[in-house]
Image 1 (cartoon, helix red, strand yellow):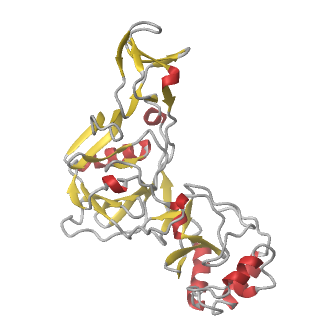
Image 2 (cartoon, one colour):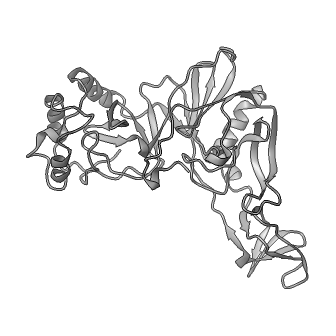
Image 3 (cartoon, rainbow, N blue to C red):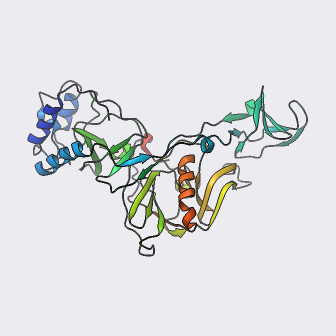
Length: 371
């Protein structure tokens, strides 16, 4: 991560190592003084850069930052033939469908959410099929997400996380963002070298004197293989709390990414399942007749059903991975769904383990609510 070093790095490291024992990170009686100080300078109030980590832990963390500045991962390659095979639009409820531009109305779109693939745009008209045209002002275009997960080809030395919401790191756990640091952008990956607890929240050490609140990131947490899964079998873990998907070969992590699972009213069921049906492309619909919940979506890619009508599949209609968005399914980016679909070809009834590594809290700021 690129930083503006307004203060010499050596000084910041030295200050942290020397002052690790000043105060306790959980509670921070010095918080009010430090919050004021962070608007001006840290040099006059050195205790503001202390943490609750031990000297041994802090020295080890700084050594690891030098030895392992980035996780051992490889970004999944984006393929145009996957991302742009189709063109996508939403057609508004009740929109008239004509046989030709300005021709005869042959039907109207149903209520609820309608997402379609289309052939072309000609002037003020969108051609859906051979003899189906919709006024362009009755539609909205979609740009697909280019987000991709990562392959993991060697054991992880540290946990890592994806940034969910842009933020500047803080100088110590529980402190406000520090203006001297660059913003860590959404979807950026960070290594986690240490953890502190403040007011029941985890804070992650991601660099020299750089801490992030847990609600800013989605952390990849390795999980123990369920006993039902063999030591050489493929399986996919879905962490509902972190909104993350991790693929395993036995006990070895091979892939990780962000997902979007079911909203509270359509929660994704926890449990151990197997993929029982696969579709390269297919439609999905539901709640027909219930206007607020009805939906019809065309040409969803790489569908892997594992729990009734619940599936892992690509979602071309949003870029909110890391947040709950679905009506029960596990939404993935187009490239991630493609990767998992191809990876499971060798074992098409791959296991799917859905669990939650934590519990949602009701005291989140609005921007951090995972939905």
